[in-house]
Amino acid sequence: RASPSRFQSFRNLVSKNIGYYIGNFSERSVVCATITFEGTSEEVKMQKRSVRELASMHGGILAGSTVGKAGYDLTFAIAYLRDFALNYNILGESFETFVPWSKLTRVIEATKRKIYSEHKRRALPGAPFVCSRVTQLYDDGVCVYFYFCMNICGVGEPSDIFAEIERSARQEILDNGGSLSHHHGLGKLRSAFVRQIYSQDKAHHQSCAVVAPPGMALDESDEESESDSSTMSETSMNDEASEFFPC
Image (cartoon, rainbow, N blue to C red; front, side, top):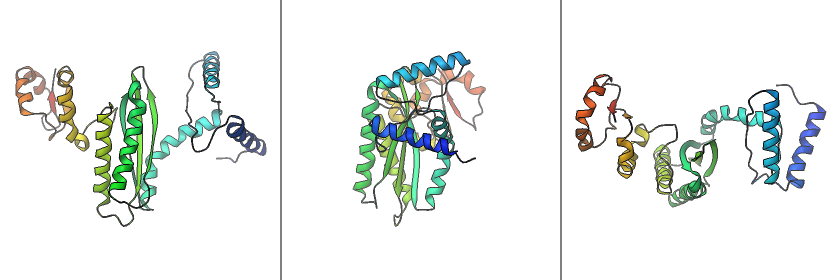
């Protein structure tokens, strides 16, 4: 990629200083939102004007398309940071959840506290890196990604310890009103939580089709109660690929 011109570098420096000093922002607490505008030229102008007015009402500023494009491109690099960090004895992973708007702050704060406390309880080296970001917005809530990294230098069975802390974090999410998953699905990694959420909202599951891989079947009593209604649907499924629990 071509290096920025002197004018572009000067403009970026001025914009940064305006944001930090005049806008009263801090590099340690500032939050960036990447927004994509779609439509005709007039529609995009209207959307940008609306966003600019909304941002100014709450003390925010528009950083420009260059910063927005860089933020968007970063999402494609995140998946590769995990392999890079392993070269330096850093183990990291992300996990997501759907949270109602009314419980968003509580879920984020409680989950972060849980990870810190579990890390401290095990007397692991250094301090864990924990952060979160909102990736999708809906009328009823949001998708939240959590990122957790820890130093594994000198730690025995680091993968198992990391998994234990992650499971504790997932339980904390459920306890505070979050879901088991937004779009990653359940799978065997989260199969231990299936019966828990099924018992909490059995009526909801009975009204929906639930596809589960082998080894993740629900209680036999539940399967037997639905056996009559499932005969026709199960014949159209590949038994080796999945087990189907129809409406």
